[in-house]
Length: 118
Image (tube, rainbow, N blue to C red):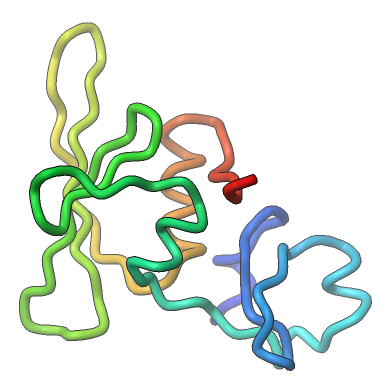
């Protein structure tokens, strides 16, 4: 995991393997090299309020829809999302492996953070 990929608000695993939000306290209590990225997994998506749609591998969070595909690489998701601006559909594809990558993409597109289920 590269430091330039992580921003405050991202979730990572600490040295104990626990899910933690990356913030100043996380930096103070952990050696950065001990922090690990979290692979995208169905269970993790549910923790962050994603719902599975009627289409297998398709998830929705608020108005953000995406479809996962696992082409050749078993541990990578190909994210295909449909974004609507002024009734125009835009398709965006991105190869994502870790949850912080999904968080960063969502934030870049919407200006909002993905939030944990309460």
